[in-house]
Length: 335
Image (cartoon, rainbow, N blue to C red; front, side):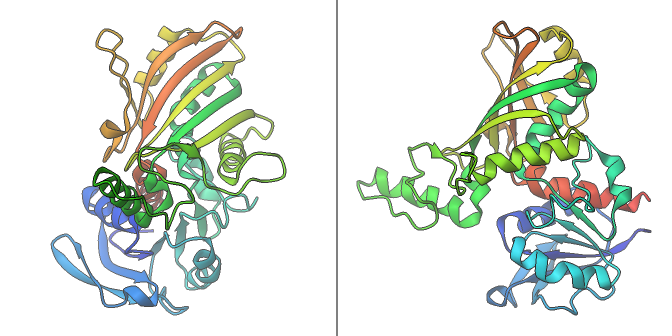
């Protein structure tokens, strides 16, 4: 594929779609033509790209004629409906939804982890779950250095993970509570302002919720380690943007904290924030708008033979979605 290209963004008016546009501009992506697609209620809306107004169009099966790359961020139902039409039109789809991630024939890619899988695509490449993507970036270089046998991870997931309306709900609830008014719950099942609760995904038969099972299955697929032991607990917290994760790993060979720090300092997509003297470590407020995943609290776990503990934070809307998708698109241009 040669630049410049005709690129389409499905779900352009949503939280991730907005970030896709910002990221394309931030990266100076070689856009020859930009098509913005959304549902009927957003048709006619004007969105800015490189100082120009672009009008949002209603998506239909014919929307992808002449499009080189389409980034889908409109949910699994829309992806299943329109991806076949896009592929038939000769377009390569980078899909942010859960629709195709675990399809054996569709690559699931974090470019810092498994870029080689991109070449296996047959017109569609899946973007992983946001928590899995943020987890994978710093753990992959450690896995290469010492082979990870087990991961225990607890997430602190921002409202942004549930979309733009959930972000607005956090803001509105906070204002209402501070004004002495009751918090209105419309998007999330529990009060998100000044509260913490188990992730709102559906609990499945194994006792884990959908978000937790996604972290397990998708990390195994990206690492090409189908038996990798992973125990996740996903939690929603009253943070506007960026997910944070507390991680403990057990490795095949001993990896000291100093060795791990050296590995992570050289790792692509990672920024080490590990200042013990100032007690300064990764925080979502610092991870917001960053393309890198922040990593700190690097320490050895004395309760395990080869244990290592980490604290990481990454922008859910960027590395967890928009930036990862644009990275994949950039790699398609290099072919």
